Length: 289
Image (cartoon, rainbow, N blue to C red; front, top):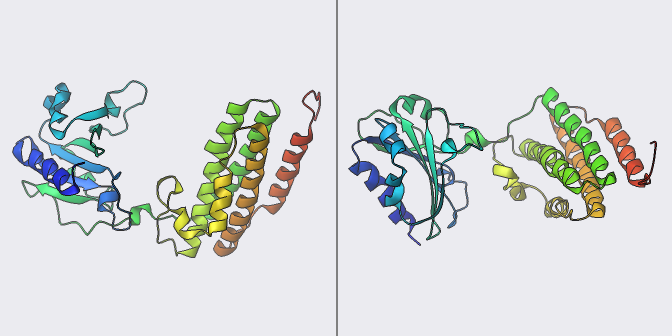
């Protein structure tokens, strides 16, 4: 596996040697002083170029970075709509385990780029186009303090979609129930847990993508219970996971509400819990509720 020094030398030498590439920047975990270091960290690189079209016309120009297992070019795919405006990305997984997420951007994007991510670090600036940037940090990714309307919306969405899970389990529609548990109920639970962490840290930390750093701040017992909500291979396990999500949400939501001076909708939570239990007891051939 090529070392970080070897990879960075190759990335910068490629940019220096190509007159069309006028600047290079990097962001992501490799510029984040609070991110753990490991062999799976990507190299999130941006090349600012004089003309995008010559690069786009010949994707083989990225072969210089090494032998790939696979490459994805999201802005060139039909399944996913482009999301980078005038930029174009090459996501490359290499045989030696390294990965580069390389984005091409027009020079006109430089001003925007300097302000869009606090983890930005300028690696190369051939023409002195960039201002001096502060050292990279993850302040843009810190948990944001919710206002009360946002807090109540999270509670409502959690309780509302919990009913979808119950309906799916009763119908024996496993995929439907599992989808709503994972993509709706759990998403709101993770958001509430992140807010809870925020109240305990003055909203000065990041819980990471998909809540991956929650384990830094939550009690081990809470993390163990959270992990148990992912055991949902059967209908019975789905019920258990749903009820555990309900309990965790009530605990975290009540704690967060108290810290923020908001109201946790305990009455709504109780009504939904009784509804879920009633659905669980409902015979499969029931004609009415």
